Structures are given as structure tokens and as C-alpha cells.
Image (tube, rainbow, N blue to C red; front, top):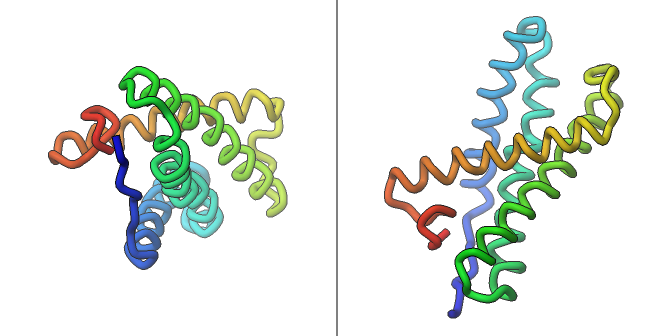
Amino acid sequence: MMWEPYREPLSSTLVRTGTIALVVGAALAGYRGGLARWPMAALLALWPALGGHYVELFFLNYIRPRLPYAPAVQAGVRVGVWLVDGAALTLGMTLTARALGEPWPARWPVWRVCGLGGLAFIGIEGVAHLLLQLRGRPSFFNGRG
């Protein structure tokens, strides 16, 4: 099967992922100490928001066309990509937070933070694709996205 490359204007990507980062950052700032923490929280939320978009592009445009069409193979590799890249995005978040003076999560080893981040990223992508599925759009669940 021939897969169509996924393309989206950069402006659409930046508006969507920036909005997600601002909203998630606001929620995290409210939970972690107030409005003064919003800029850092939004910056950290950009890692999974914008990074997650590029993880999907990487899978859709570079990995998927090289895999057998078997749905189980496609789904398994995609979840594996989400796990590994989610861990890498979490490492980026952790290093950014530490570089900016935020000690969180200092009491956990980095491997644990990244492992949990990879699992959380699978959950985030699952919810995102469920919303796409409910809207009738191509998604992980219908094999078209």
C-alpha cells in the first residue's frame, strides 16, 4: 500500500501546539505554585505538544511506509515509537527544567522519570487519537492515521 505523506502548514502546527502548551502550562502552574510559574510550565509543556507532533510526522512519513501493511505490525511499532520518543521528550523536559533552576523531579532517577514519561506519552497519544476517531478523522484506531 502506498501511504500519502502527512503535511500541515507550520502556522497551523504552531498555533495548535502553542495553544496546547499554554493551556497545559496554565493548569500545571495553578497546581505547582501560581501564575509566576506559567511561562516555565508552558515551555515544558511544549516538549510533548510540539515534540509529539514531530514524533507523529516521523512515524507517518518515515517509518510507516517502510513497514509491512499488517495492522498488528503498524500498531505495535507505533506504540513502541511513542514509548521511546516519549521517554526522549521527557528527558528533554527534565533537562530543560533543571537548566532553568527547577529541581523537579530531583528525588527520582532519570531513568524512572523517562520511563514514566514514555508511558504517559502513550496515554496522551491514545487520547489524542481517540478524539480524532470520535470526530471521524484518520487515527491510530481506524488505521488511516
